[in-house]
Length: 97
Image 1: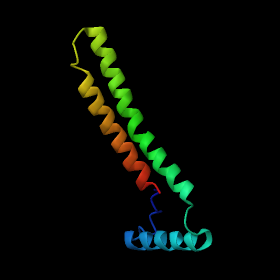
Image 2: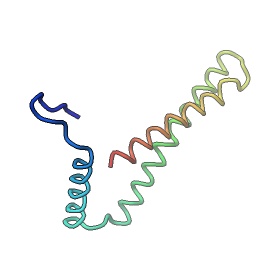
Image 3: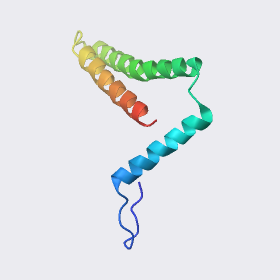
């Protein structure tokens, strides 16, 4: 977001959100609803966005456990870190639309 010049007041958040809603409504009137295939594709992408970091964290934890001979000490934290990263990424992706 850019800051307005010193002589212009900052845009009111209510006005900005109202314009965004209006623009989305106009886009919906032009294009209509998304197809079932596109919705399923978005759900699939969301799943991959969540699962891949979790598996990556688990892989990294198992790799560290093998190198350091620590049993499964790093596997759980690695998976939790991956789940957190995947959840944050999925959240950002869902709210960017």
